[in-house]
Length: 191
Length: 110
Image (cartoon, rainbow over all chains, first blue to last red; front, side, top):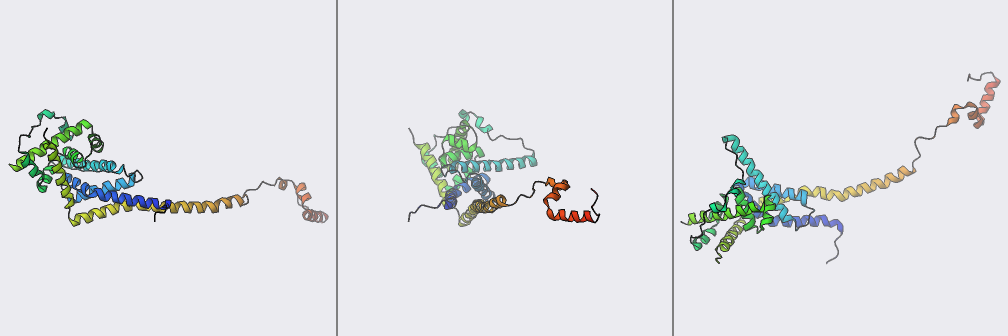
């Protein structure tokens, strides 16, 4: 039966769509949050908060807008968590404040090129799940976000910049540095 | 041109995908709970909205005719009350009572 749906059912359909959308992104969102926090409970909290904010504020937007909105909320929440941790650490050990974007200012020429290493070995290491997760986890937070959004989520530079709320130039630098760091780290693991 | 960077990124992507596919049952259950909680939070607002609209319509349906048909609470003050002669002229019974009081000499002072 393909009879026209009464309009009263539309909100329920919206919930069904939103539920399907959230179900499709929850695993990756959790993995991202876990890589950033290394704490299962914190990662779940972040995912829940991101989902709630999407439902509360953007449930009436078109479903095509949800992925970008969700990523923006999620990345913001991850960064908030990271900043909160940094603040707590600073209060405890009187560390010098560090700006996450400072690392983006470093000239690209300063980054060592590791392409002379054995590509087959590198790919083999890149297939080792535990090693990859450990190496990605160790990336600075902004590099990690740029890498996951560009390489894993498949966002372009502009969409990644929107999700990370920074400039496209900063995204390019973070992403480039992340790839170089990952390459070096995986080569070092292989050696 | 070498495709090594592409292969490297593709391999990393596949490895990360695999890490999500292999999430344990407890984590999957937790994620399901988290999702249900997020959706439930929006549900009451969503489902109460039509009910509230119907309730508001019913109240309006009752209130509007009632307000329209009800007698005005404040009427125009009867100025005649302050004018004895005119008031008595309009009430023959009162006039009769007045005449009777006049006859027995009991007319109240003005």
